[in-house]
Amino acid sequence: MNFKEIKELIEILDQSSLTEINIEDKGNILNLKKEKETEIITPQISQQPMQQITPQQGVASTPAGTQGADETSTNNNANTNAVEDNLQTINAPMVGTFYKSPSPEESAYVQVGDSVTNDSTVCILEAMKLFNEIQAEVSGEIAEILVEDGQMVEYGQPLFKVK
Image (cartoon, rainbow, N blue to C red; front, side):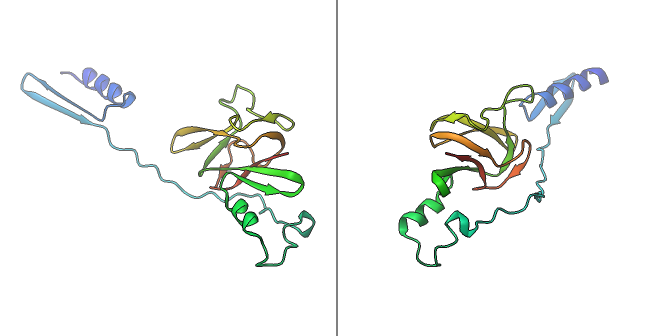
């Protein structure tokens, strides 16, 4: 077995889902193993200021401890929260990178003013090299897109406001 053949085998292993190749040729044993890729994940700090709820929005004016059970359970929902003027938010169900379209050449899944239903795909979140299509899980009209394309998002972070 010559160097060129070994190099070709290495390229085949690298491009395939195989993790190991063992070859015996004329008494010589060749064992090629693909090392597990370890991805170092470092937290990225967003340069955007935190969203603060003001008394004009009606939520902060409620005295502490007087929220009803219905409001508390609504606020704990990971996918949608009720907000002022019947606006709801579509929140990130996982940590990942937000993409507004399936590829850079294609148009966004939704834009401000678009109507969505419960099963409408609104974006993609990439987590660990897996691209997850995110459904609206609410019906209405997109009122605002709260994150930028390519931005890292946290679990529960609001992505869209829906009327």
